[in-house]
Length: 142
Image 1: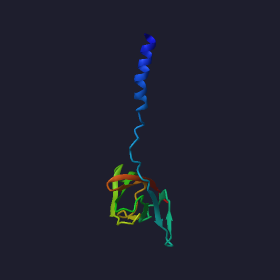
Image 2 (image 1 turned 135 degrees about the vertical axis):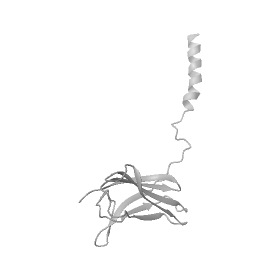
Image 3 (image 1 turned 30 degrees about the vertical axis):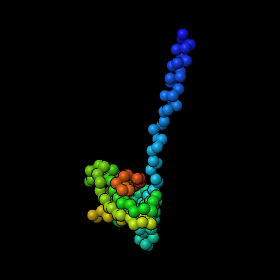
Image 4 (image 1 turned 90 degrees about the vertical axis):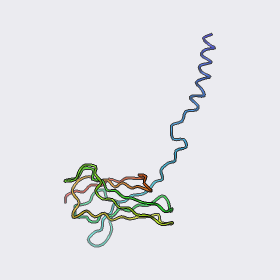
């Protein structure tokens, strides 16, 4: 009897175990996009891939390589994570652009009112209203 009961429990459990997924089945993987922070040097050259800038590095340039050539609304939000004189985790600068068919690169210039307050920031990129990527950077006194 015990053997029959154990066999029955195993038979009932097998379909349940085999039917389980890790929760990603059928879920679309978010397309990757590339975000690069840059600044223009005094000689006019552009330095990309920055993680730190100075307060006088205005404008900050953000290059975005999109995962699609379809028309897309691209929004850049610079969040002041923790910066002098700014509320923590507040949106500091927001810029949007609608691409045309065939465009897969966007660049934004971000200009604060005067200088960048020293602190930690994050660039959030949204594609058609959905967050698609982030890049952190710091503003350090020189």
